[in-house]
Image 1: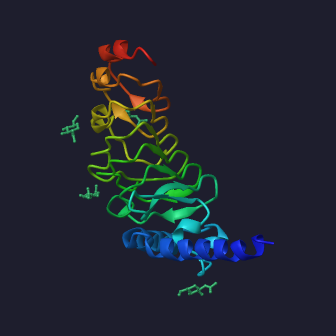
Image 2: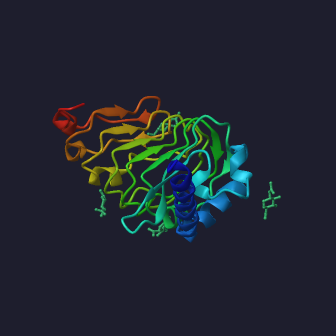
Length: 218
Ligand SMILES: *[C@@H]1O[C@H](CO)[C@@H](O)[C@H](O)[C@H]1NC(C)=O
Ligand SMILES: *[C@@H]1O[C@H](CO)[C@@H](O)[C@H](O)[C@H]1NC(C)=O
Ligand SMILES: *[C@@H]1O[C@H](CO)[C@@H](O)[C@H](O)[C@H]1NC(C)=O
Ligand SMILES: *[C@@H]1O[C@H](CO)[C@@H](O)[C@H](O)[C@H]1NC(C)=O
């Protein structure tokens, strides 16, 4: 019966691995998610179980760095009736975030700033009540492929964010019903693989930019 001997050893190693990985979660990320837990209502109940770490919380997905450190890679908490104001320093805390999905909730206050989140690929914040946009919010997002802010009707009137023109990996831009006003810039030739562009239910004026004709994948 050799299994009786190997199984306990196997479990011992699993336990060690868990304890080690607990120690290796970036402290800034833990601090941010504890602030998030304080600030936001209606979070899943295991966020309040003190025997868990942030990487075990529902809606938080952690990755491993090559040195075996853990980092917050995804936050996916859509359609959960979450409300109140997100802690603002997201861009200084979840520095390796790749996807943020908080769509279809009741968040209010400013959008979090994404400035300098160079791994961020997908932002889903549609169908909320955000009411302001931090300065420089969309700078330094070299990996950005998808942004959807649609149906945030309480945003103050703003113009198409030309920072997005810097990101040649963009495939999808959703800015319907976000109170966009004024002219669209004639810089759409910077988007070589843009496939989806939602701009309905806004207050845009002027001519459709000539550079739309370069959007061959649209
Ligand atoms: C978890 O810890 C916090 C702060 O230390 C405490 O207020 C809370 O009651 C604890 N929750 C449970 C379920 O023990
Ligand atoms: C985070 O965002 C704020 C507001 O946009 C900005 O002032 C700050 O410089 C950003 N931090 C980093 C590290 O880019
Ligand atoms: C992004 O684009 C804006 C205007 O389109 C430009 O002023 C800014 O320097 C660019 N930023 C980066 C990091 O390339
Ligand atoms: C739309 O924008 C124009 C200026 O371009 C402004 O005069 C008008 O009040 C705006 N309409 C609405 C409904 O916000």
